[in-house]
Length: 144
Image 1 (cartoon, one colour):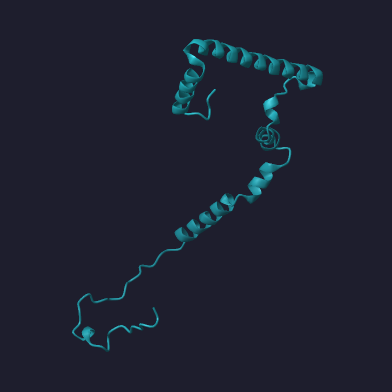
Image 2: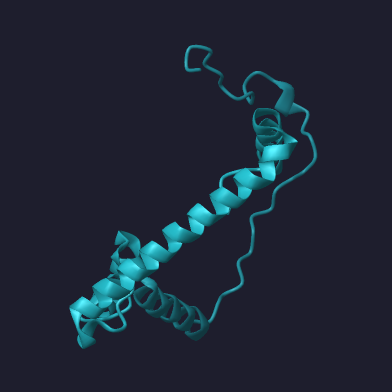
């Protein structure tokens, strides 16, 4: 009943109701409000039944909630494939093509034998000449 209200707001409204109407009249007012809500609900249910009976037997399963735009689209367009949406989705889905490419790459890599790669010999020791300005890396302060 209180979908958008937190517990603090409900307590605040209860305190305001007690302050405005007093503890003596509050039960009577709550009964009147509940009775009014029941009458409104009965009126709307009878109106729905009257509309269903006037529409005829072919609309016996008609629900008024289906008139909401999101529900209407979900029920008539997305659930039923009368528009060929599954074909369009499958045509635009790149997963099948990517799976074929991945399989082709796997086959190509497993069929060709790999030759061992020999790395070039790199010395990890510091040479005496590396400190000289001739071997220092060129630095351009204007480039940064």
